[in-house]
View 1 (cartoon, helix red, strand yellow):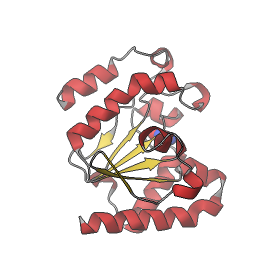
View 2: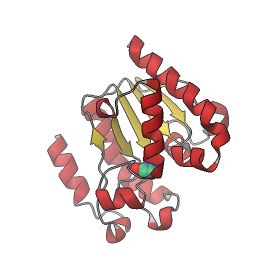
View 3: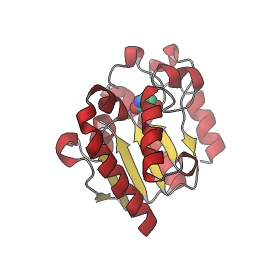
View 4: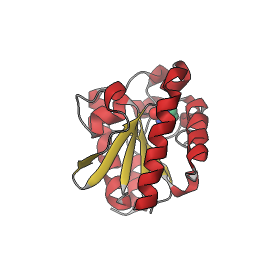
Length: 182
Ligand code: URA
């Protein structure tokens, strides 16, 4: 599939009930030749309204970390496990993830990033391991099917618990150092 076909299919998707309540399908944004790909959980209210991932409060915090460690947001690709917003931002259901994950897989296949960074527990449990423990394992790199993968705290979790902010900075610096070596 080409990018155009994939984006069109995703935007017209009716595979799960979330299409009934979405304003926009939030397909993904950024550099389609990115070395670094971020994967979050699902669109929130601002993302649903704009069609762009990570533009709300969590996204603004992510932008601050990118800037702090010297990563240009225009150089990376950002997507989510789910492309449509779950009502009241509840956790994505396994059935919704199963219906939606194929779009992300195609995005990864087209981009072939050097490193995939999961933003938060939901993405890490889906992409790295169902047993992933973000509090213990954040910032560690693993190789899965030829991709280097890691996870960091979700920016929304940092807004709720600022004690994790130092860990986030350390992890993001490590990611930047990895990119500089590649
Ligand atoms: N949280 C996410 O996981 N993704 C977004 O796009 C916005 C908030």
